[in-house]
Length: 103
Image (tube, rainbow, N blue to C red; front, side):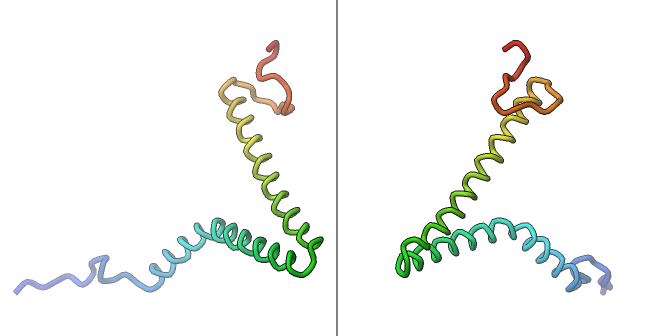
């Protein structure tokens, strides 16, 4: 009867490795989960404010608008950076400036 080696990696998997995998997964999903929870919280705040005082509803609307504006600005900056890399421009430039000198 052949003796089975007990040092195979599957049998010696420890709780530390399992918890590390769980930690990495939750760390990866933390950003999207916080975004979803924040969105649900703003919606709940908006509807509660609409029922209590209409003027208080401007606060979550302003926060939501600020978040949307931040994402739009971030996307515009990323697009400008990609265009600069494509065109070979190394220094910073203003958002309205032409891509290449002379254009």
